[in-house]
Image 1: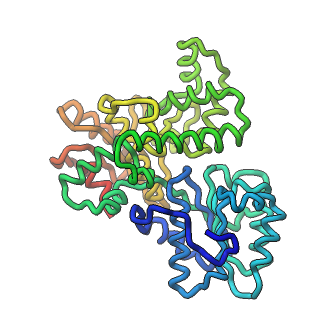
Image 2 (image 1 turned 135 degrees about the vertical axis):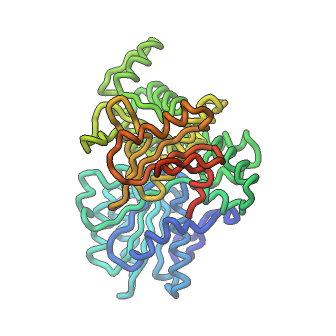
Length: 415
């Protein structure tokens, strides 16, 4: 891409591996011409840049000319001199030469010092529609973000869902869907990993993303001194996803391997890892008391492919990995997700979206009457009429007493 802003040819080299991410575009589209700042947040290389290119393509189809579209990727060395707020403001201001609306796209905006002041000034003084992306979930939580408070809409971008994978690979047959799901279970949905043709190259690619997250989004951003401890914590989470644990339990684990660490440090490091979008934290929700519980949480991987960096063999944890996939799917569908808590019982997910609420239990196979009763009978303790689901890999329909059972693959492919 040339620096003059007139040539909006993106650097994406793998266009044949891209799909139109309509799930996100349909949410963003109503805001294209509004002065609200459009904020796309997600883990590195989850496809935020591609979504920007797809928005630009749609603008061009609506006859917006290149002159009124300005795209800057702040991880491109061509723009390293624009990471100073004043330099960025002056650069963009010079490009705005008339009263027509300008569409501004700022990719990985967190690399710009005091970026909020620039964005707010351009929004307030120029006829602009502004789109920004960032890899840190705290992009809008800093003190300076108060400059744009109430003036933005945010969208969380995830790696490919399984339905997007099937769309990408043009898979419709049931047998091939099962094969693709096994691959998805192992290697996740980071978009460009589908370019890799063998396991070694996939692992190298995911390692590269992991290193970028650790170095750029955690170590440098939060000035981490004990990198060994950081890697140990990430290793622990990667090898035990979908588990409830607290900083206290994590502290005991480190003590068992002769590694002393304070509770405060553990909480801080877990927070940094979450804010880098490598993992997500699900709070526990007291279903009867209707309140959030503190102290213990579940952590889910943003992408299961990262487990291949540090561990092999997922069969013994397949239930946990299926639960992780369902959690990510719910997030991508726009739900707020908690772990349901009752006395002596747990519901895997309580998912809310506007006025909608659903309950979901996830298990590998309903292979015995004991497992069937465990997954279905827990709902007897809930006295409301919101939809209740049990998801498993079984193809036989075990639905009973208003509780809907679905095959996980079928559920993931629902429109």
